[in-house]
Image 1 (tube, rainbow, N blue to C red):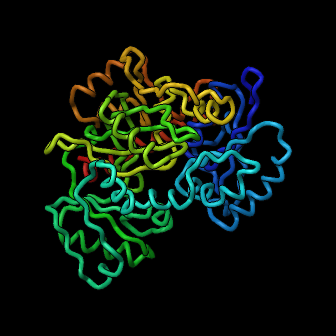
Image 2 (cartoon, rainbow, N blue to C red):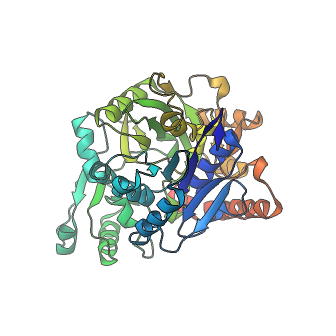
Length: 417
C-alpha cells in the first residue's frame, strides 16, 4: 500500500467481522486488498475483494502458529517497506505478544509485552489493576476450580448474578450444551449447575462472579482507543450500544451502537492507559449503574473490538492510526482525538437488519435519535460495503441477516427480554 510515496504492508490475522472491518478501513483509504492469514474460513471474509485470505490449518495455536510465522518472516524479510502485524482476536493478539521478540526484526508488532498482556487479559488481574487506578467495576467474587470441585462455593450477591470466565482465551476451547460467553444466573440451583458443567468440561482457570448491574443493553458503553508506541493515547471513540446479540454463543456482542461523547470516561481511561504504558489498540466494555450513577468496567480487550468498525464509520478510520504511528511518524506531536464531539457527524453502526433493530431495541430517547439517523441515511454495517459487492456476497449477506432475524426471535425473550 502507498500514501504520498510512503509504502507499507498490513497483515491481518483471523477471518471474522473484525478482520473484515479492518480490511475495509484500509481499503477505504488505500484502495488495495489486505493480506490475511487464519486457521479457518469464517463467513464475513467470504467472496470479498478487500481481503486476500490464506488458510493454514491449526494456525490459531502454537506450535503451528510460530512455525508458520517463521516461514512468513522469510517471505517478508526482503520487503523494502514496513510490514505491520495486526491480530484481530484475543488468541492472535496473545500469540503476537508472546513471540514479539522473535518477530519484530521483520514485522511491526504494535502490542504490549507478553507478561503485561497476560496480566490484563485475565479479568481477575484486570480488576486488581482497576483498584490501583481507581477505576470502578461491579462487586466481584473469584471462584477457583478447587472451591468448585470441593463444593465450597457460596455467592454473596442477590440473584440475578453475572458469571464469566477469568481466562477468555482458555474459554474458547471449552464446549458444552448451554455454554455462553457470559451467564446471567437467576437461582442457586442454576448457579450450582452451571459452575459444575464449566469445570466438568475442561475449564481450569478461575471464574468471575459479579453483582449484576441492572438495566438493559442501552446502559452499556464501549470505548475504542489507540495508544502510540510512546505510550500516549492518540484516539478515543466512545460508543453507546443499544442492542446486543441474544444468541448464547454471542451474548455480549453488540449489534447496534450510536456514538457518544463523555469527557469523564475519556479522561479516566486515558489516564489509566498511559499510566500502565500501554501500546496499540484497546477496547473497553462498561455499564452505567443507576444505583450510584457511575460506569462500571467489565473488561479490556487488547485489540480492536468485534464492532469496532463503528469508529471508522464515525470518521476516525481505525486502520489509519497504526500507519500514522509506525509508518508516517505523524503522531509524536499530534494532539489526542476525543471522538464524537460533533453530533452532525454522527452515524449509527448496525450489525443486524434495520427491522431487527426497530423491533427489539428498548424504547428510549437514544433509540429515537438512532431512528432519525436511519431516516437520514446516516447508518452502516461492517459487512455491507458497496465497493465490495457481488452476487455471492450479496447472497451471503442475506443469509447472515436471516440468521440474525431467526436468532432474535428464538433467544431474545429468554436472554435479553
